[in-house]
Amino acid sequence: MKSVRMKGITKNFGNFRALDNVDLEVEKAGIVALLGENGAGKSTLMNILYGLFPADGGEIFINEQKVNIKSPAHSIAHGIGMVHQHFMLVGKLTVAQNIILGAEKTRMGFFNKKKLNTEIMEISEKYGLFIEPNKKIDEISVGMQQRIEILKVLYRGADILIFDEPTAVLTPQEITEFMAILRNLANAGKSIILITHKLKEIKQVAEICTVIRRGKYIGTVNVAETTEKQLAAMMVGREVILNVEKQPATPTETALEVKSLTAEDENGIQKLKNLSFTLSKGEIYGIAGVDGNGQKELVEAITSLRKVKSGSIKINNTEIQNTSPANVIKNKINTIHEDRHRRGLVLDFTVENNAILGKQSEFANRGVLQFDKINKYAGELIEAFDVRPRGCEKQPIKSLSGGNQQKFIIAREVFNDPDVLIAVQPTRGVDIGAIEFIHKALVAERDKGKAILLISLDLDEILALSDTIGVIYEGKIVEELKNTDVDENKLGLLMAGASHGD
Image (cartoon, rainbow, N blue to C red; front, side):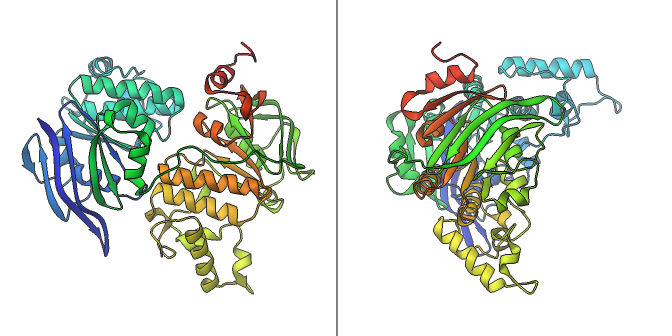
C-alpha cells in the first residue's frame, strides 16, 4: 500500500518553474530518499506535501485517498509530520514543553506534568529516541535537539515523516545514531521521506530513491541495485568524480603560525590549551576532531572574533591575535565560516550587495556606491562558481538554495585573493555536484600557492583534501600526520584521545 502518491506536481514562482510534472511514491513502512542538487526542487516538493505551498498542478494521495492539503494543520491531520533542516525549538523551554508546544492536552486550562512526561517517555522509548524531558533546549546537543523535533511530530500522531537534510548539522557519531532511529521508525510502521544529497547515507538506509533535477522528475531506482556513481550521474546529469584528483603539494614558506594558543569559551572554560601548528603556502592543513574540541574557538581566535589568553597568531610573520576582524582581513586572511547565515551573509541584502561585504569602499566613488560596477562584479562571482540561478544579482540572497549560497560565499572569499583561506565545514549541506566543485576550487587555490586551513567534521573530506592533518583533542593538536600516513580508523582513535600507535 502506498502511503503517499504525488502525481504530476507543478509549482511556479512568478516566471520560474520550480517543479515540472514531478512524481513521488512512498510505500507504507518504507524509506524513500528524495535526491537532487541544491535548488532542484526537493524542499519545494515536500513543502507542498506539508501544506506550506499550494501546488499549481498535479494530485496528492494519502493512503490511496485523494487529498487537498491547504496548510500544515491540514497535513498534520492526515498524519504527515516534517522535521526541518533548521530546528524550530524554543531554547529557554524544556524538552517536554517544546514537544507539546501548540498541541497541549489540557483540562480546564491545566496540564498534568507527570502524565505528560510519562506519555513523552513512552513514545521516546518505543522509537529509541532517548531524552531528558526536564532539560532546557539550550542545555542539550544538536543531535538531541533533532530527536526533540522527531518526537514533536510523533506526539502529534504522524505516520508519514519528512526529513529535510537531517544530517547537515550532525557529527559523524550523531549521524550513526540517526540512521538507527530511521530504521526503528520504519520497523514500527512509519513511512519515511528523506531529503538528502548524501549518497553514502542513501545507500545505508533507503530502499528506494527518487531523483529530481532542475525541477523535473528524472527517475526512481532500487537503491540496492544502484551504485553511488550512478545516483550521482542521475542527480547532476553527468558523470561526477567522487574522488578528489590532486597532485602532491609543493609547500613553500610559512603563511600562518599558531603558537601556544590558550583561549576560553563564553563560560570561562578553557577550550584551547597551548595549541600550536604551522601552515605553509601551497598546502592544505586539515584539522580533524570530534565537534566541541576547540575548533570553533580556534577559528574565532584566528579571525579576532575571540580574545586569546596567551600565545601568538602570525600571518606572514605579523602578529594578529587580539586585534580586529578588519585587521585580519587586511593581513590577507579570509574565512568561509561554518554558519553561513550568521557569519557569511546578510540574508535580506541582494546577491550583489553581499558580494562586496567588507570591501564597499572599493566600489565607491567619493562615497557613492557604483552599482553598475557592483553588479558586474557579482556577475563574475556567479559565473566563475556556477551559482544558480544565473542572473540572480538583484535577488535577495536568502532566495538562493543553501548550496548556491555556499558557492557564492566561497567565490567571494577566493576573489578577495587571500594568502590564507580558512574553510570551515565548506561543503556542509551542499549536494555532490557542488561538493565536487568546491573541492576542486580549494585544490586549485592550493596549487596557486595559497595556504588553506580546512576544518571539517567530515573525515572523508579531511582525508580527500588535506596534505597535512592535525588531530585536535581537548583543545590541543595531539598529533600531526601526512595524508599518506593515515586512514579513517587511525584518525578516529586519535580523535577519541588514543595516543599514536595505540
